[in-house]
Image 1: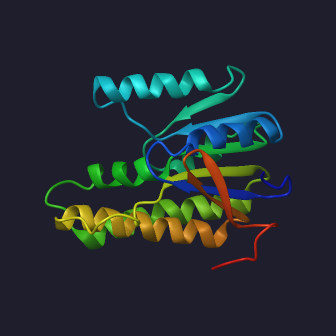
Image 2 (image 1 turned 180 degrees about the vertical axis):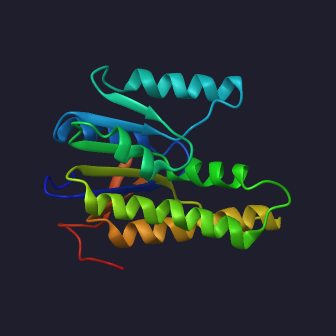
Length: 191
């Protein structure tokens, strides 16, 4: 399990791998109070139901901040007394950045916007006296996407994950609900 002294924990994994559940478990064992930062938008009924299921899985005592972009700035404004901040998830944050960049997408501008979001988050971790638990999908294990937009998304999320992993004290890869430590006290640091 995660080390109590970790300032930032990154949890990576595929869809339905147990990332969010593990983040909640870490949050339960972390200093209280907890601020849960949700980046999902309910674009359809299925997503609304998923969001509601995630809400029910969290303790009622946790504060929830729903924010789709400018996450770092909003956390600074809303952190209050929180000792632990869970951000779920970077995957949707990157998607939200894409959605707000308009059509046609300019790859360079999208990359700048994604890197600005990640830069704000890594800066925030250094500025705030709280533990951060960050969830993101690992999307680089599958086939190369057939279209340019999907490849750009995969590439930028991969770059975001790398930057977060470099900053993180510990990194876990979730496989079938099992957390595999890949960086931290029990593992040799990897960059």
